[in-house]
Image (cartoon, rainbow, N blue to C red; front, side):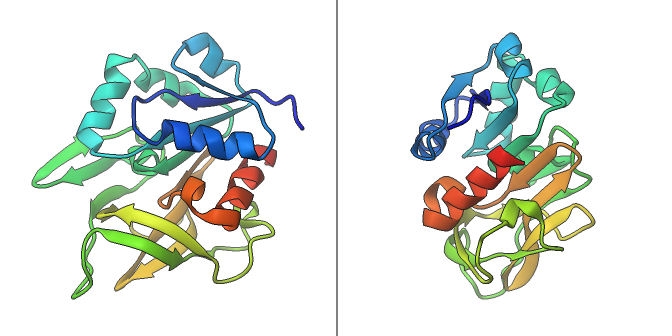
Length: 200
């Protein structure tokens, strides 16, 4: 379908394989790697993550990936925790974990009123300014979320979701993109979003 070099950065997180399968279902070849030469030669990069920011940043550090991810010039898509890692910091209980700093935002525990945490299940995302990441995705489409922490809405927000209060469901700063939901688990609209990113 395309000879683009697509690389999933091997963060050691559990959802790496499901992201790979989602890309392969679209007809693309994809490599999972933490080799700097492979990562830097890619046309598109994905940074998936599940679990805690502490564990994920530790994995990136142990694999010498922090400076690598900070230096990439090609489009990179952070997924779920991968999006939160693009921010300045992430709250974890009472601790604050320093993150990669590509997006000028801090991830904090969601204030959900009487709604349960984690925010888990299907919710709608409202794109901002017809952002190309949401091209050909119908209005009020549902995406699959599992998270307790979120980034606030700001200048970097390209998709917004409400769960008692609004939060950033998708962000962008330059070549860095992030989605709080799991596109690889979001059926047809998730597949379309991955396709849009790969064709940006």
